[in-house]
Amino acid sequence: MKFAVIVFPGSNCDHDMYHAVKDVLKMEADLVWFEDCHLENYDAILLPGGFSYGDYLRSGAIAAASNCLQQIRTHAAEGKPILGVCNGFQILLEAGLLPGVMLPNQHLAFMCHQEKLSVANHTSMFTNQYEKNEIVQFPIAHGEGNYFCDGVTLNQLKQNNQIAFTYQNNPNGSAADIAGILNKQGNVLGMMPHPERAVEALLGSDDGLKVFQSLIMNGRLSYVANV
Image 1 (cartoon, rainbow, N blue to C red):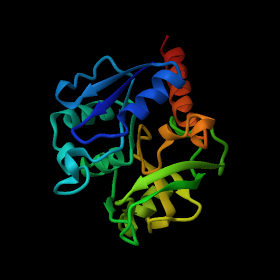
Image 2: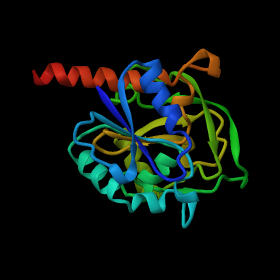
Image 3: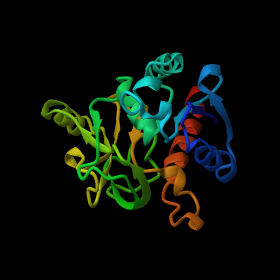
């Protein structure tokens, strides 16, 4: 399975993502500059955290208008796995690949610490290696992680089992304690906490490994099914 880690001006978690996939999980991975975005030969696309374009206009808004996101829309429609973490989640929201918007944290302060999460959906291609309602610990690092959507959208997220992770102690005021959501088809995941920074005990947690292991397992099962 081959991963593309998309790099925008201002990305700063790209090498963390690359290290998690390439060095820890021993999978093929490339850092892909957004202007050199040719994604046909990749099996999964990863949008890392950071401050793309300095968060000018709105977080993720300028990156969402790039040609690279046009390609990612095409691949998402074809069912390819797309994972956006932190700024990557914000980009997916701005691109319309996930519903809702991101607001500044409830207390208007940047937060950087470990948070406990609950695995709300343990059956998706990103979470199939977790147990139902498993409690995990990932770091967060954001100033705009307050997820918001209207009541109709929230009901749809719940009814369609699109809420992947929820906070145990909602740190930023997100609606329904949401930390990560899936698209309706289940192949696009956006989440504010950083699984790529929780892949080794040295980092304080390796609970994030299962996000990537779930993707790899899903890829292997899809390969067998298509042989």
